[in-house]
Structures are given as C-alpha cells and as structure tokens.
Image (cartoon, rainbow, N blue to C red; front, side, top):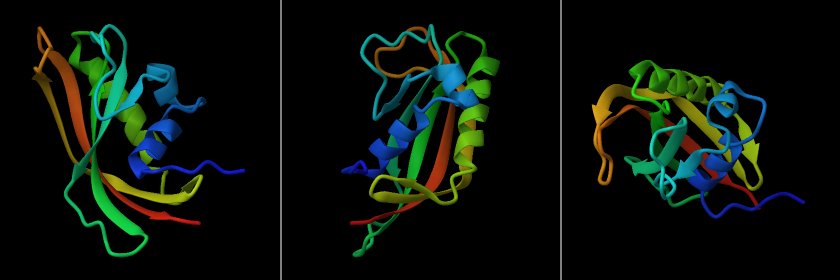
Length: 142
C-alpha cells in the first residue's frame, strides 16, 4: 500500500530524511518542514524546507511552486552550511521523476542561492546559513 500525502512539501521532507545519502550522513532526520524544531541551536546540521510560493496552483492536478531550503551546518563555520547545501543539491538535482506515494515530483535545479550570516527570530547570535530556492513541479495521482 502506498503512502498518501496531503502536500508535496511534506512528501519531499519525508523523502529527504531517507538513509543512504550524503545529506542523511550530514543531517540525519534533522530536515524539517516550515520551521526548525523547538530548541534547535545550530549545534548539529539541519535543513528547513519552506513552501515559498512564487508559482501557480493550476486548476488541474499539476502544481508549480518554489521551495526554499535553509541549510545550517551545525557550527559557526560558514563552510559547514555550504557542505549541507551541497549534499541537499546533490539529492535534489537527481529528482527529475520521483514518485512519493501519490505524488510524482520533478525538481528543477537551483533558482537562486545565497550564503550569509543571518539572524532569525529567536536566534542569537547569527548562524551561517545557505538559502537555496528550488523550482518544483508535482502532480497528485489517485
């Protein structure tokens, strides 16, 4: 029996948490939807995936949108955040036709990437983060 997902972002996050990739080696299951888990303090690598919109929810089973991924390296070293981003990019660039339960997914390469020391609400001090935006097209199947 296949898994049914209510939204593509949740399916992507569950897929990114699977073992056997450099991303899993770096982050384990510390890949979250919408926001970092409570208490995250950048002492371990993590990725936060957000539906950044920027596209159309077509009046059909096809959705096109942008996913923002915030990559944290688990230290104050900006290169660690870049390594997490590279592992994420390597997983996503191979996602040209992935089936996740009731969702068929295609991720087009990076639209934009920035590397910075950023301070989110509740973050002190600022942590190195790589922000990456990916173009996503998905369809839902029965």
